[in-house]
Amino acid sequence: MRVSASAPGRVNLIGEHTDYNAGFVLPFALPYRTTVHAVRSLRQKWTVTSDWAPGQSTSFGKPESAAGSATWVDYVRGVVWALQDAGHEVPGADLHISSDVPVGSGLSSSAALECAVLTALIELSDLDIPVTDRPALAQRAENAFVGVPCGIMDQAASVLSEAGHALLLDCRTLETEHIPFDGTILVIDTRAPHRLVDGEYALRRTTCEAAARELLVPALRDADLSDVDRLTDPVMRRRARHVVTENARVLETVALLAAGKVHEIGPLMTDSHTSLKNDFEVTVPELDVAVAAALEAGAYGARMTGGGFGGCVIALVEPRDVAFVTESVEAAFARSKFTPPRSFVAAPSAGAHLEK
Ligand code: ADP
Ligand code: MG
Image (tube, rainbow, N blue to C red):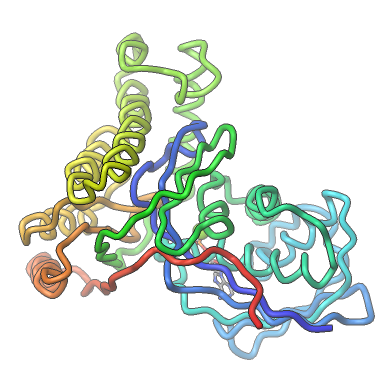
């Protein structure tokens, strides 16, 4: 038996660093996907190859526990492990992976890989797992097996997105709503080297959790701005203020989109970036320069997207301004002597599915 499945990368329209604070996010799936061709094997053994790692073929038996060898194969082993650990029987398989999702650019190639493998293995194993339960399984692979403490957003976007829509996700209840979105989003990959990502990400999480404990709330989702003012540590206060204001911006964005006021979400996107720069302190000069140049060139709004410390900026633009905004950002990068950015327009695309 053989099956093929694919899953997309994502950008996040708004709602950054809110997922692990039980808050709201609004990502959408990219038109770039990771595809897995899976062939059932007769033994309890998995063999994995990827176009991304030419010439490498890795085999493994039943994954025991978080191995943490931290190679790309762990994303695949982690999915087999998460399924088995949840009590599902998964037959051995040969898996071949190909992808056009940029890897390591903050567009969530890792979730695309996990979710494509998960979708293929569920079909190959004839398992009955509702789609709404799948993001948590893929997240578990990344958290517990690969050892990356990511929130649920990336996997939820990769599994649950619908073409033409952004995905409003309540990260506490995992309730979703598909929000029609037809704005023109220019994605600018700054190609800035990821700096300090893992340590700083973990530190932001710990600080947010400590702030919630100090305020005696389950998560920062449950705090408001008057609570934030009660925090004594100035750094903790800034971090918490970002999360509280960002959650509000997600809901405001959704309300504007529901009212058909697409361009009016621009200032909320820009406010989000300012908050991530000044309060959450996760931007780098490349992200700030790209946002400033896009706004200068007439974008309705612009912000970093993803965890920060490198990665991508998204700008909401008029379709006729795409070339001008792109060139303006390129010119600003050249002036700053940064690596030239790569840009593309992304329309909201479909989530994970089987391929014929
Ligand atoms: P992002 O998810 O933003 O692209 P991550 O660092 O979270 O960045 O994940 C990138 C890692 O995921 C790669 O270093 C690699 O280990 C793995 N990966 C992603 N796509 C593929 C692929 N097509 N083939 C093999 N490994 C992949
Ligand atoms: Mg990732």
